Length: 155
Image (cartoon, rainbow, N blue to C red):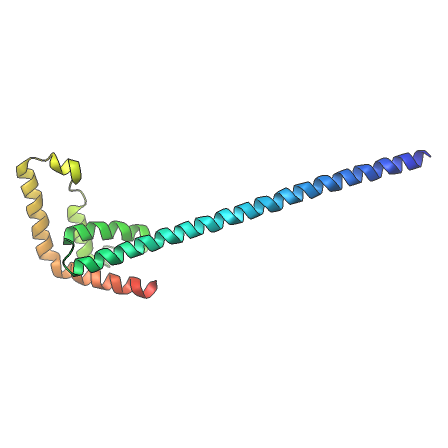
């Protein structure tokens, strides 16, 4: 009789442990599915962001080649976007015209900080920017054409 009781208790313990293990496995599977979905969501968000960066570069580049965007503005925007899209492409040796223009204007104040400059300093910066645009116009346009061709081939 005692063996039956012990056997019954053993069966209950094993059944309880099996049930507990089943719950743990179910929770693990649910957690893995949530992680997989989270990873997929992150990848989709990242792909959407990459496409936004690419589209922005293409739009600014085309507008610049059509003289709808100043060279300094284009260089500043394209360089930052390119560095975020593919840092390996944002090489000064690869796009020397774009980089030289970017390097010239990157530290120049914008918006409210620009409004706070005295007129003499503002004229000096504008003159420097305009002279640099004139000097680098052909190189910048060549770089933009090359960059647009490269990006359109890759994507």
